[in-house]
Image (cartoon, rainbow, N blue to C red; front, side, top):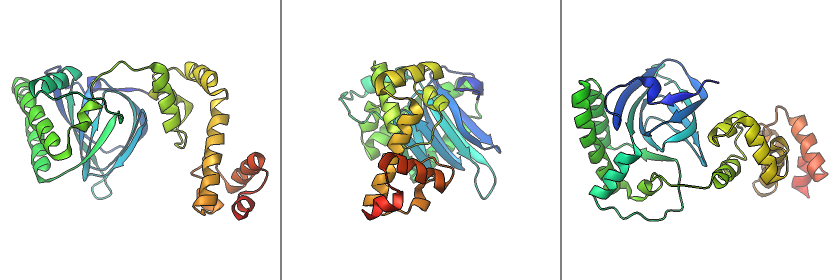
Length: 279
């Protein structure tokens, strides 16, 4: 699958610090590999969006918008049911512009445990007007865009801090993290998501062969067997604690049919899912 590099592939031109792009399409995409060269606000206008990034996965309709940290992610875009279209206003900004904003407004940087790569915000009346302003700016000459976008970025950040709190900023601050910790977080947080090895390797910023090698080194099992074990353990939890029916969960556990799920479950636990539930 081709990797989309943003904002480079959009050919927006203009400032390297701030960019805005009115993105529209009539084609859906499923788990497209996207490399974000800059932090990005994605103001969803029409359609449905899903994002997997590091240890974060989110799904939104056009009543919400996203703030995504630069890096690798998997992105799904689905069309609106009413007008058969997808539209998102993309507002890109660099790490340097973020740090400049933090210094200017004397924001005290704190350690923050939730270093999520994607944040979800709900629109309000003020933000709807703000996004319409971005749409207008995207039509201006590049020189004027550059000047206005710097002001709009500061306006947006100040408003979000006032209405949503300052915590989201801490997770955007660039930091030198352990590659091993990053890798383990991606594996653990996606153990119940049906992602392919290629997709997991992309999120980990590794080749598939390196991902397999590192996986077996640190988890002492092959990826396919390890993920199957974790999903069967989760299935056991759903059967016993949530009283779910085997026929309702086998697909979510990654099995094409009920009989394969029953056989795999029996191999691990020595009884069928129904017997396990009744014991």
